[in-house]
Image: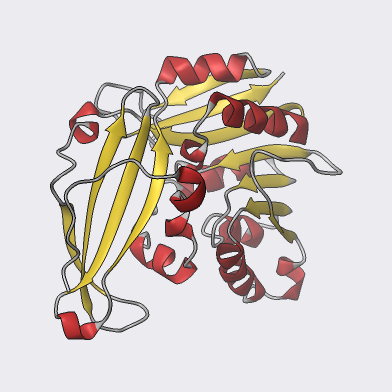
Length: 270
């Protein structure tokens, strides 16, 4: 059955902003292709050394390689379903390696730990789920509190692309066919979004629909992304006790340019 809609519109972020992260199997399936950041963060974290804090660890995509490298890693995530999937992956590493992992269900705006970390990582646009100035301030103060003096904070966010932001919210985009991990049948994946220029928030809709309506249900998953401009982010970091040491336009260490897809920040806790 096709989902009928007029266009993407804003929705309540508190109620629906995390829908996409409640089914870890769907999340892993939809993003199994995303591997651009893993070598970069693995090399950076390995060169600095632990203990490591990963904020928004999800299903353990980055944590598992760090644990294999012998690092002590604490991962926090708001979704218990994501954490359970991470536990399953980590358990397969063996008891000795898994003993170096700690997983905690926690709101990233309320980071507080008994000990401090040498490095903190917030990868794959996780910071873009901080929608208000208060959210961002609470988060950055928590990261600062969690790091040792001169500790390293690394993260990435999407570089604003007005060609994408200004897409027609009444059209579907990114049409992909895939085999559904739960139903085993062929589905279509499409998206659309609405950009609120005042609040700098993108309201994203992800549609999963069976090619044959007999092959499973149609449904929509939603999430929001706060758009951050590079100088805006630099100001926020500096006013919360961080110094930006490097700002890259990708995980290859290239300079940030107009058409860079990602902004990668490497910061030092003052």
